[in-house]
Length: 137
Image (spheres, helix red, strand yellow):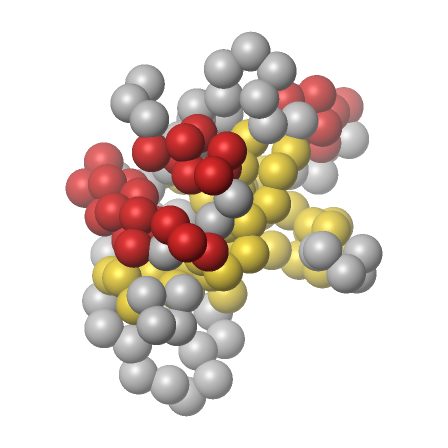
């Protein structure tokens, strides 16, 4: 599990405690007991137009279909709500419960652009999250 990895989770738990089917992107490389930080995605564009890449006003990063292997459809990486998972929780979901499915990796260029987009949203991200996402490995 590494930064830029995309996973499918059929029982993703949202902040409101509802669950649903989601793909998410890992945003950091945890050190020590730090959590994995993830951004969920959606293919529901709601008939809106988005520029490719960073759309800070909407707090999304747009990846058109075919640009990245893990996203076969037009996809928005939702940057307005970040989630954290412990290493133990992700490993359990992957290895023990077998509900987490690795879908692929974002390219280094796309991941760099995604992190740069998050930098534009610095005031909307907890400082500890911002530091974990933006530090160099």
